[in-house]
Length: 187
Image 1: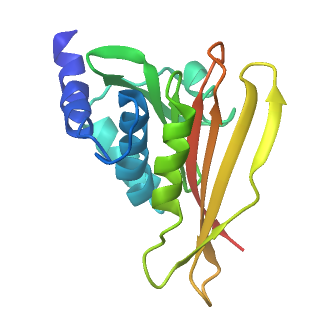
Image 2: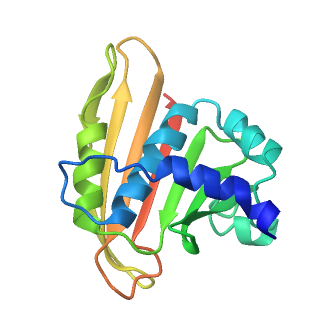
């Protein structure tokens, strides 16, 4: 069992570097954000490359039945990601056939996540431009009140757009307090 989890601990150690020292935040929010911006964003256009790398590393992943809980009821893969020596708080998911990557957190500070997310998403690399979309608030059964922030990155004249979304819940009884996705879409 130790041999199987060793690569995940190496991955987790690489991702534990605090993301923004200036932000007053909790460790879970920083880890979640780092996982999202260092794995999902750079691999959104080609999630199959990330999938192949994680599979080649023989990182333990959820069985397909459980993975579909994280891939929006479609085929795909999902990996539990350890943090501070514990499993169960973070999941990385890659739905099959989509240019999409998602990170889930059971527990993370919503305010800190929103600050970090907006700091990154509002600044698209040139020549792309970032356009903040209308925030959405919802009441849900499993997570209580949720708040979704989204940005679209686009390049003038290019039909490909990148959609960054963060949904958070402040409810201490929420099944999930955070979900961040990045999708590459063609219009």
